[in-house]
Image (cartoon, rainbow, N blue to C red):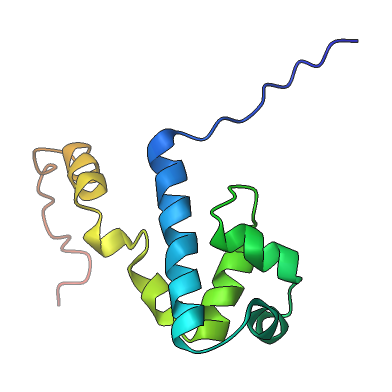
Length: 114
């Protein structure tokens, strides 16, 4: 039976972002004077997994990445990632789907007028 599942190919720009993030994590680790083993222990992961993350391997789980950022004390920087308040394109699309005119005005009911 042939394999009908297609293999995931990461777009070049996305791969570059993954590689940059790995490099940034490596710089943060080195600035702290930590070895790969030190950070791996602090994050509760395998040294090979941390090395893969630092090398920008796209198969590294996002949970591992966030845990490593947490171990480095950089997890607060994640608050800006995909923040809906700064998504100008998404906001514009949402606004374009809103009704352009107001509905009929409703008369106030006199049911409770004393």
